[in-house]
Image (tube, rainbow, N blue to C red; front, side):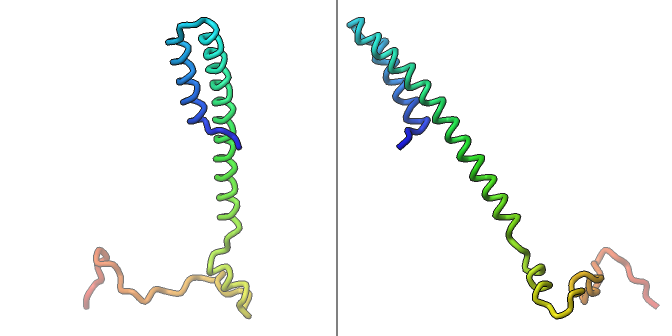
Length: 104
């Protein structure tokens, strides 16, 4: 299991605090080395997390591109191969209110 960048940053801060408050020199040296190691691991974890996010986004985009629209599927199953490629049928709706229709 790989540690998250958040865990690494928390551990780094803990070790830095331990080093700052250590009375013994050897405890301070070990804590400083540990803080540095946790910092490096945090950078690696951030890279892994960013790569996973990019991969997820690319996979989502690929999945969306593979999806067919319903009208495409209708055309594939139609006996008339030209269905759906002609002019759209005129609308049965009345013209919008902003369009004035001359009266006789």
